[in-house]
Image 1 (cartoon, rainbow, N blue to C red):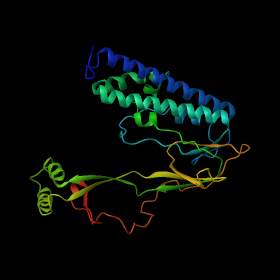
Image 2 (cartoon, helix red, strand yellow):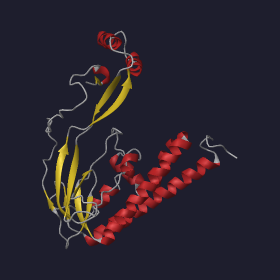
Image 3 (cartoon, rainbow, N blue to C red):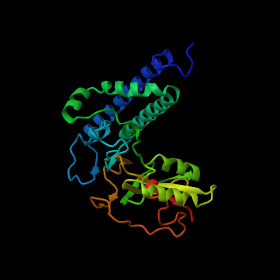
Image 4 (cartoon, helix red, strand yellow):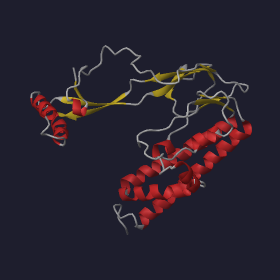
Length: 295
């Protein structure tokens, strides 16, 4: 019997890839069902900077799962919107989310069990899209964008009275590094360059056991605060979430909640005050690595 680390042509890998194709087909089917239902019902909808959204805007948003040519793989296209959905449409959107979760879980399993098979899967899956050949020719789309394929559609768990959107421009990810790891990263760069030598000397002057922070500034994103009409069972009156995909709220006699209009573009400067308890020094310690010291 083939072991778990078998090559991609092994029966186990083959069956996983076949299962992945079936899961992807199921995802496409649930999206088709939800998009068709939306187009039949045309519920009250607010779309960011679209006065009158076209009936097929949701279809385009949900089927947008492909890399554009030369697109940064870390970037995703956003579809900021609010839909007042009835129970039937909410159920259909819930089915899309479940299919997305199943697809994502199986992809992660393949990535762990058969890493080499993942590239094979990514080349095969686009062929499952009913119009992929036309799409590829017309728009120059290159391959499946995994992050866009599995990202969930926010569903409010209770009626919402208002939605407040705001740009969040100060997000960042912080990864802890040891002095040894920072030194290794610097040594991968041009060690003959004066600025690299200066940073290596700075690094040698701090305790070897000190923990450093490598900071990656994140792209601006839209955040939404949902204010519930009545407090939830747990007492919460609102929910904050990222608004990269359309937000589906229970319809209130076919009416949308009150929605503010955010600026078209994120602010160019920081709008939130720095936390007084911020743990990182303000000045970067190793500029080439975006590494900071803790206070």
